[in-house]
Each structure stands twice: as C-alpha cells, then as structure tokens.
Image 1: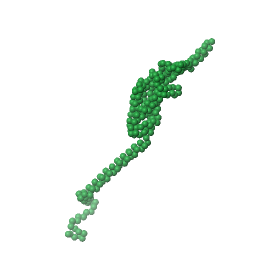
Image 2: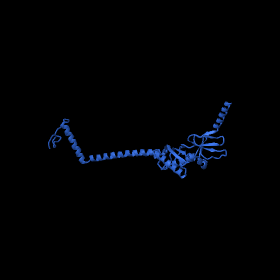
Image 3: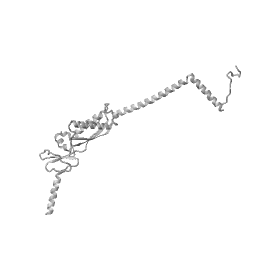
Image 4: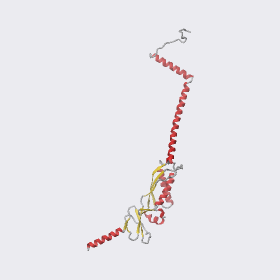
Length: 263
C-alpha cells in the first residue's frame, strides 16, 4: 500500500511539473487565463507557473541585440557607403512588460522560438534611422576613423527618440557597436588618385626648383667677374701644383713671340 501511495504521489508530482513553466533568468512572464485575458502582474525569474489551465508567455528582457547588416547610409558629402554593419543592444524594464505588451502595437514586437521580444521591430526601425543620421554627419573618407563618433551619435539619436515617445523608462539602450564601415569603392579610388596627383605635383615642384637653381648658377658663371675669378683660380691652382713639383714650369716674357724674338 505504501508503495502504491508513493507511486501515485510521484505521478501526481510529475503531472504537476510537466504542467508548469519555469521563468528563466533574464526573462519575465505573463499569465494568460483560460478566458484569454492577460492577468495583472509579471511572473518573476525562477518561478514555476502552471499551464494546465491557461498559458504563460515569456519575454526576454536583458541584452536584446538588434543587428543591422549591410545598410547603406549617405554621408555628409552625399556619398553612399558600400557597407555599414551596426549592432544595437537594449533591455526592457521588467516592471513595464505587461504595459508594453498590452498597450503597444503587436507589430512592434517579434516572436522567435516561443519567446516574444518586446519592441524588437520598433527598435530595429529606430536604430536604423539613428544610424543613418549619425553616418550623415561625416564625409565618406572620414567614416572609418569616425567610428566612435558615429556610435555615440547613434546612441544620442536613439535615446532622444525614446524620450520623445515616453519610452525612456521602459526601454534602455545599453550599447551601440559599428561592426563594419566601408566607403564606396569609387570614393576610395578618387582619393587614391588625388594622393597620387599630389605626390606628382610635389615631385614636379622639386624638379622646377632644382632647374631654377641650376639656371641661376649658370647665369652667375657666365658673367665677366665670374670668368675672371675662374681664370685667377685656375692660375692659382697651377701655381700651387708647380710649387709641389707636379708640373714643369717655364717663365716666358710677356713680349716673347713664337720665333724666339723679343718685340
């Protein structure tokens, strides 16, 4: 008899457990009664809630990631980026779950694997708009090095929009990360051509400067004073060489002619 009682207890306990749903960490639940009405009060993490009568909806509330892949915003110089990938992470105030789910449009939410991600579609649209506005603040060729500024601007625009919609106490933006950003290839090619042209211009200017200095030198050497100086320098060099015994030297009178006669 004792064994039968134990067996019955185990079966009843198993039935009760199978008819319960546990709210996991990072989630909040709402109970829907048999009349399809949502009961007041959020179901907290760690609680077991029977689903034999009615049902339980679960809502992740921590670190919900919205990924914006391959968006192509325009920059301040009206160039379209070839790629921009952004991740926006937000959280839900657990105490606002019932209000958000019952009062906001169902199109704002997203469902996946039996969970309802509150305001996911809304945040996707909001984050995309904010990222486009942030990218438009800078020229295309500065977008890569301005990654941090674009992230901060996106945070600012999203936060302002949440406040304007009176959602800043229900939704919290926790992080924005620009995972990739790339200007259009035509912009990159144009920039490289401009750099190459600038380098060529520097080279030509240097060549002109060298030619100018050489022309000035030649002009100076062609003047009579310079010729006299060069002749005197040559005679001095010859005299020095003669003193050292490196050349044979014969003194010829200034009035001596080719026939050996004096004039």
